[in-house]
Image (cartoon, rainbow, N blue to C red; front, top):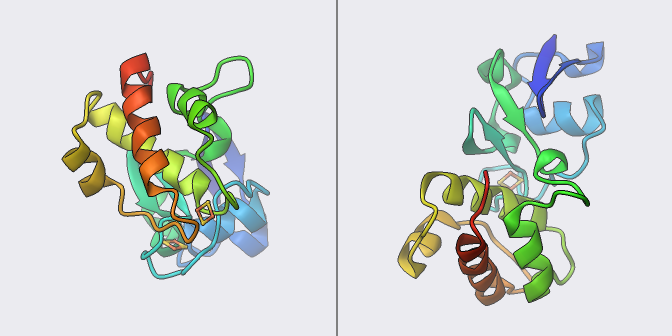
Length: 155
Ligand code: FES
Ligand code: FES
């Protein structure tokens, strides 16, 4: 089975090609893209958030069969050291992460939000950011999203 991930067509190995397999398993175990994390496995925490055709999706409950031919973007392609996403600049400036486990999902959810709403209000941010963080980084996440919006997120 083939997947379109981060702008490339990638061949999944046999053990990660069952259409019923969660996308998160295929990304992590099949393609070794381990930036997306496993937290709850039931769409509750958002640690596994990726983009599917530009929309935030919880990869732990998204079957491979549902994303055939769709464009999947993971945290590995959000930005680079040379060309960071505005959110990554803001995340660093606000020193958002603590343990870091939830943060790739937070960033992908925030990137999807800014792509559809470049100037979100606090209420918009709270409505979109349903990801959980056991370290309680929520106030810094919100500040960083507002800062990225001011910088002009490019995705
Ligand atoms: S691991 Fe997917 S939502 Fe928690
Ligand atoms: S930074 Fe630790 S869970 Fe969010």
